[in-house]
Amino acid sequence: MKKVIMIFIKLFTGFFLCATGIVMTINANLGLSPWDVLHQGISKIANITMGKGSITVGVVIVILDSILGEKIGWATILNMIVIGFFMDFLMLNNIILVFNNLLLNVIMMFLGMIVIGIGTYFYISVGLGSGPRDGLMVALTKKTQKSVRLIRGTIELGALIVGYILGGHVGLGTFIIAISLGYFIQFAFKLFKFDVKTIQHRFIDDDIKLLKERFLNVKEDLDAN
Image 1 (cartoon, helix red, strand yellow):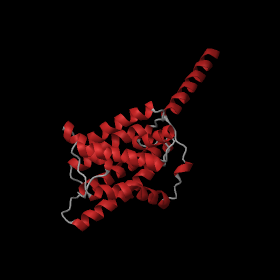
Image 2: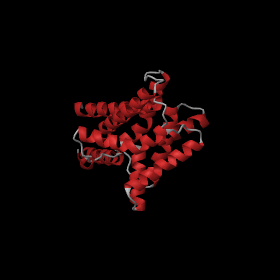
Image 3: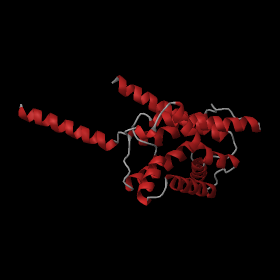
């Protein structure tokens, strides 16, 4: 039980850090990341908060992941919901500062990417599945047999274009984040000496199979008695 509690503490710490980093890049006001351009565009069209826009996109992507045959982990579902909730909490309560200084905004944007990288390490390292967007990248890479770089770039570009059409804010920071974020995540992994290739994820269907097996074993024991 203690191990499970520690896993979920680490998981939710990762989600909170990711949300904090995202809000820092938003408050830097230099242009949103490609996905956040989409989230903001949806929030404007649907008249909802940006966090709810993130959750809406996450739901659609999780459905796509399932259709494409990608396994869903508990962290995938929680990522979809919790990060959006934390984003709204931080933004609606004005917890992250907003500066009217270009240098400070640039610093905040880069610090935000560092925080996102650390948060990504925290939540992925628990081994309960990746986020919906990463799952979509993996699923499309398997289906198309194209490179991860091409698939990721295509997805990000698609999110950016749709978000811009819907009214999301695009600026110089958008392109800096699109190019740099992967390097900051990689930096965080190296900082914590974490090799993502070694992680063995536990998926929801694994737990369902385990519960079925235990149920059948209990049933057999009862029948035997």
